[in-house]
Length: 249
Image (cartoon, rainbow, N blue to C red; front, side):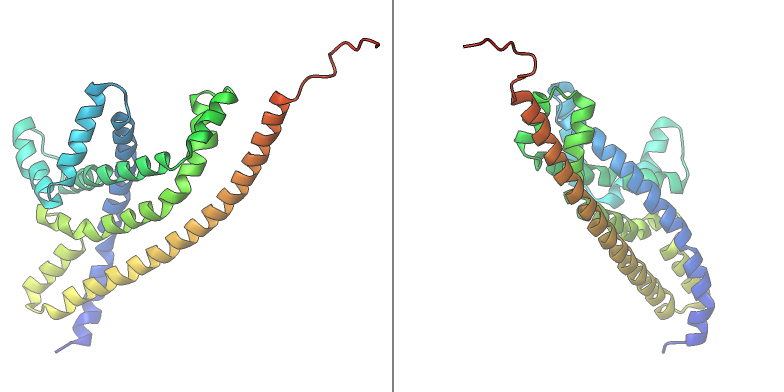
């Protein structure tokens, strides 16, 4: 039977344990974003020494379980290198490394979704690499990425309970410790599930709002960029009649 008194008594402790989950999610997502950029850049490189290892690493990580990777990072790797990082650091590295391979595919799809004509237009306007990426390519590639990146943020958050396997005291391990004292399993694990549900729904709502606002801003920027491209193209193709000599017939 459900015991409301016991549920209310453990709720503050369970809610407080989400601080560790939020920290692991934030750092893991940041690492995944940065690692994804590195992997997609290496994977698109013309140098085989960069391209082949990057693609091989992506395939290896995506086709092995996250739990096995965490065990390797926490138990096996320290024995080989003689350095034993904390459970939190290992968990963040494991989440970041695992999901960086998925983020690299998000970046790749976004970049390849930009029409080739945009690259040619940048070349015709003599844009350098920085101008091409930050003025033309990324503003068009980012909006389609936002929903997928938001989904991966939520997925990383939902995967934080796996870190309890490497002794990180987060929400799930806190609930497990409570059950070992009270021998009541119904309330702790049910509350963990309900809290995760509420937080994920809030995340989804906020990410949806961000996506709508970003797309609205992107549409205005795209229209402005199109007008700018049109003016510059017109200026390049329009003959300079002011400096021409006019000869009488």
